[in-house]
Amino acid sequence: MTESAGNKKEDCHAANGVKPGRNGMVKNHHHHHQYQKQEKVYNAACNGELYSRPFIESFEETPMLVAVLTYMGYGILTIFGYLRDFMREWKIEKCHIAREREEQKGFVPLYQDFENFYTRNLYMRIRDSWNRPICGVPGAKFDLVERSSNDYNWTFEYTGRVVKNVINLGSYNYLGFAENRGICATAAGEVTVKFGVGVASTRQEMGNLDRHEELEKLVASFLGVESAMAFAMGFATNSMNIPALAGKGCLILSDELNHASLVLGARLSGSTIRVFKHNNMQSLEKLLRDAIVHGQPRTHRPWKKILILVEGIYSMEGSIIRLPEVIALKKKYKAYLYLDEAHSIGALGPSGRGVVEYFGLDPKDVDIMMGTFTKSFGASGGYIGGRKDLIDYLRTNSHSAVYATSMSPPVLEQIITSMKCIMGEDGMTIGRSRIQRLAENTVYFRRRLREMGFIIYGNNDSPVVPMMLYMPAKIGAFGREMLKRNIGVVVVGFPATPIIESRARFCISAAHSMEMLDRALDVISEVGDLLQLKYSRHKVLPSLDRPFDETTYEENEE
Image (cartoon, rainbow, N blue to C red; front, side, top):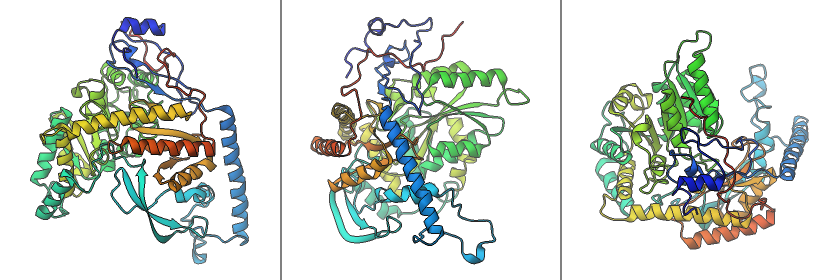
């Protein structure tokens, strides 16, 4: 990739024609906007002393003709949607829509027809691309239950056939621990026999097992923090703990692409929420500066606290948080930092310790370290790590801790065994080799896709690989054509993405062999030619001598 980009700062600055400011930070160019992305490359290793390694991300601009045709496609679908709604109203076409009963017509409607327009007229056309039932372990390959529809995807019937050995490019099984054999499965089975499946109580009552205590000590050791706490549900780890950390009179600064659990937690907290542009440090610093200068609305009193919410890897963009710069801003403006490592823990860093280790930073610089066990560990639930007084506070004030049933014993054992494997405490090198294989698979897969001419978003080291489809008709077509060739993929469209940025999202795993990846890449290339998806005008890896983007913050005048 980049052999010497981070070795000598003077060489790097000279190569890019940029001189560092007085504080060692570089002012960059080419502003990044989520909805009008420009092709750009970040080489943050050149950004003064903040980065110790090359940091390369690319977001190629949507071709103009593709954008126009995409809007036209949605326009045509909308026109036909209104026509079909008219036909349904006049009983010309059979109506499958959930409607109020005649005797309830006078009530406030439970179903809002206009709000469901997209669902019934656009989503239903390609609904077969989602919710596909699998009947096996979601490892590198899985078995899929075949289904068919006779009413244009309103209902499905099972054909009785099972599609065998579908290559799985959709599950978050980054380290390959989602398996039904091996040390993790064996340990989980033994614990199930001893403890049973459920705990039937909360941690504060009768549901606190010795295995819970062991897991939390192990998580704290793994993260390099004083203490940690585990929760039975990853989504609730965010949505139920943020309200315990912030409230009225507090300010939350949230990345515009944060996960729904972070957004919900921020809203439930009652705090004032302000959103900054994705991974844009100038936008974040402007909000921080304004918050310090102006304080709360109307009263202008200082905020009780300012909490910055970010993710390690963003699961739709494949981008990695610019954590060194976020920490620098957090320290400069005395804010708190909440880092969600759902996708990055286990998947980044030489020993799988996430984005903090990836950048070589001190875990103590992150106030609240959150992550989930649902991805790299092949289990379920989440954790929060940090200072001991923070965790002690959450044990008595978090709704998820007080009211939720504690984590299931076999799930606990899956996490403990896989985490010890990653840390090397099992006396073997399986964990380290899987981390290395994931990194190699990620770089190889991304490079091959770019060489083929596809537009790929995100960081070179991110195992989440979004490939742009754009046009609405190609969302369903890509998923169907891939499945015909025994490749299972996830396709994503509006409203989960901007309307002209529909995409396929591949998740790379350490369980994928090189033969599997080559087979998948050949099929992707074949389907890409069939559907004309090779939009890129830059068919080689981006070079390091391109301009920076203008996302670092301004020089300190002191």
